[in-house]
Length: 158
Length: 206
Image (tube, rainbow over all chains, first blue to last red):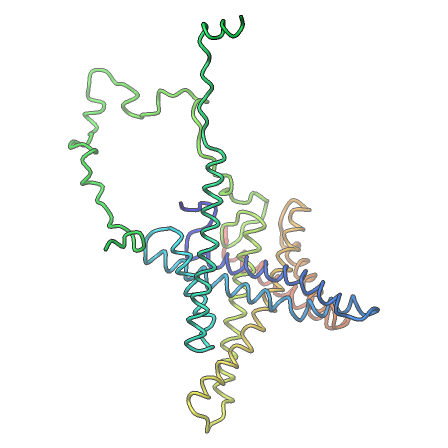
């Protein structure tokens, strides 16, 4: 089930870092642009939107990027240790990512965050597998129509 | 209890599989006979062209834009964007984190306990690192978006594109601070992108 559109493991971490950062920064620009526009008084709406974007969009991008990069790093590590590719890679990597991001919040916070992140990734993977099965089921091979024998065709025509 | 569903099954040695047969074909056993049958050399040799469908890996092709060769093989604008932003972000994060670490170690109160000291240093690292990383990442993101747009508009890539994209992204980055900081930032980014072009020429020396 290897994905051939992605690069091999050590370099793909950089790719995921950048992709997640770009996603977060662009999404944060849209999100905080709208939010800053709506929360500013009339007459200062444009400048309010711009300053909200400047203050918050890079932070959203950074948060996304760190999450994606850590996840990719742990995913590669888990792949390297287990030597196989299946949904458990992502779940284990999600567990470690959640734990690593909450490392300063104390032991209980870390445990909760790790389990929550693993559950989230399990849901993602489950939905992904469901979609895959559904697609395969939709495009399943169909047996060709069997041509009718001449006698029954004649009977129908008569 | 069997945990092979979680931890992976034991690898089977393919040589122990009996379906491979006992005797491996040698050159003389293949072409030594009186009649050479092409289908024994290659099992698909009897298949007429056009009957066979090959797997098409379309996303694997490298970018064929003239002059667009970079340090890493790139498949187009999305690879440039992701790798460029990721590498610059990590670089900024690392440099900022190292600066924060040294600053935290230097300015931590001398009479603090080790626990307080650790917290102080960590706070300093997480204040400086993400700030520099985020700024560098946003700059690289803007630069790459402008650069790729220019490439696709002009149909080729050269140093002029890079310099212009650098100047424009620097100007946008400081666009709310007035004309003078904008010009300074644009000049700095032009210098940085010029240095990058020079580095690329030194490394890719063909």
